[in-house]
Image (spheres, rainbow, N blue to C red):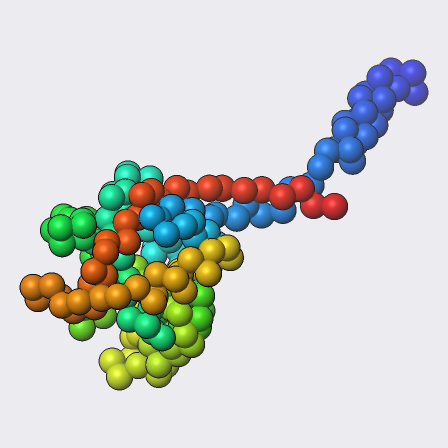
Length: 199
């Protein structure tokens, strides 16, 4: 009887050895690489705290929606905003509005990326902004409407590029203020999924 079970035992031992040798993988990180005419910005997205917002952003990015748009609103010491207009200030047609997730997201600190919206809390579509200062007054618990602006990522490379953009000369153009005199073009936004082997 013992001899009959020996092949099965050897097979199980072999599987255990393979499992022990297989590398363990850490959770996948989702990054967004924004290539602009002033340099590259890399953002780590936060789907754990802002799943709807991250999916919305990645859907726009992967469809090519952001390619050829500009940072159309730049305010030194505050933020840079983009993702909705072409260089001639034509507003692009967007998909539907999304729910505001700001009550569960990171604070609007320097380097964080959040969704832009109108005065209506659940009105965000494609436009986003990068905080160049600590703007925690935009958080849900400190905003006047009790909703705030949903942070969905953080700059991990290229904050120097963000700072350069924040210093460009701006002007009023039509109904819009703080528009860069020389357009800062978003050439592309690419989504990158990375997995690190655990050591």
